[in-house]
Image 1 (cartoon, rainbow, N blue to C red):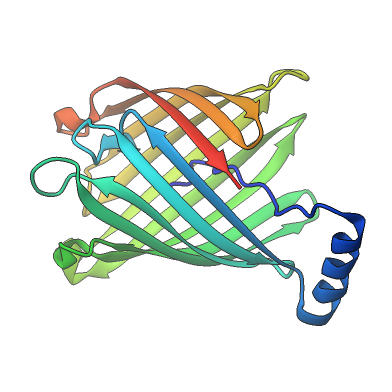
Image 2: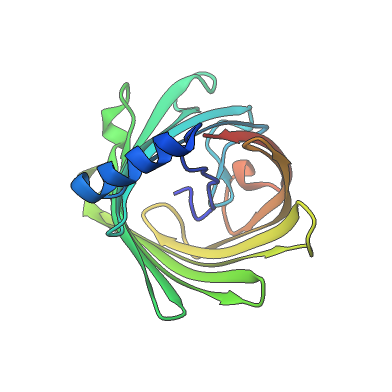
Length: 234
């Protein structure tokens, strides 16, 4: 999920006090729902350190809905290189539950990786993470587990990671990093890491610059690189 790798989202806003009051009445009647979206472009599509766009640029789009109870669901789309060039499509359909328990944030869910023109690549993965605040920043420990399934060669796959993010004072800049270990159908004790910075440009725009590298990936698609990105959340 790209996500570990965190995604910015802004709540829908209303132009007048009357509209806000009307929305509050609606929430009381139907439950507090929120719809978020994001579009972005990156110089490479790196997933757990490996380029899935054959080192070509990536364009992404996401739409999600969440409820005040903690339930959420959404779809994330990107171009991916499965045949010739990075013009194939990946759709991630996900759902889960997130909540705060004291100082701990928990998130559990599942994602279905769907490749419309290459159904032999489709698979399901289960996700779970716990996080906590460390000063003004956050630290998260997570795991992604893909059970044994036919499209994974009847093998399972496990990815564990630790990630963190820290704002730089009151500036619009924050730094972040992730370290992960993957073993199973996709890798043999592979390690990957990412360190970078984000700049809040305002009006929903965020720029990122990340250094990404791997060890034991056994492919040049895991070679060290710098990935630049720009996203717009609404």
